[in-house]
Image 1 (tube, rainbow, N blue to C red):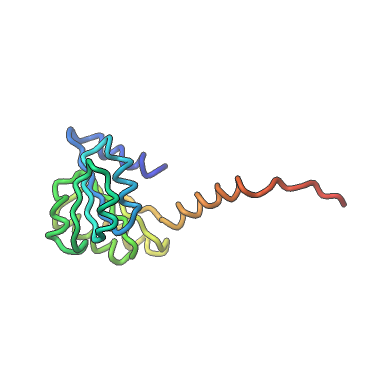
Image 2: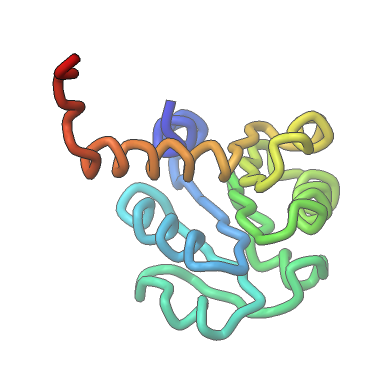
Length: 153
């Protein structure tokens, strides 16, 4: 099941779907662009460079991702995605979104698959970035490698 499929279900239940993307990387701006046509998307980032890459129709706020006053920009969101570079920070942001702003569905992108169980208690869905990346790289590698030749023994 892809991330797009996982997010469509919670977004479909709301008359004015709202998606908050909390990110420190271009993964977030790409995701915001992908969902801009089906949801009212807000992007919260701590990087001016990332903010500049956000699509024109996406509300963008720049600030400390672990500060409640920064996250308040997306407090009315139906669904949030947390895609930050450090897993501990992702856990903290997820906890803030769930406890301070009562966002019901939070999807978290993790780097370390060993941390899945810790974040799973707080997040609605956990996606392991290393597994996704490995799958994409494997698919590209299969297209690049030559077909095995027959053995001449």
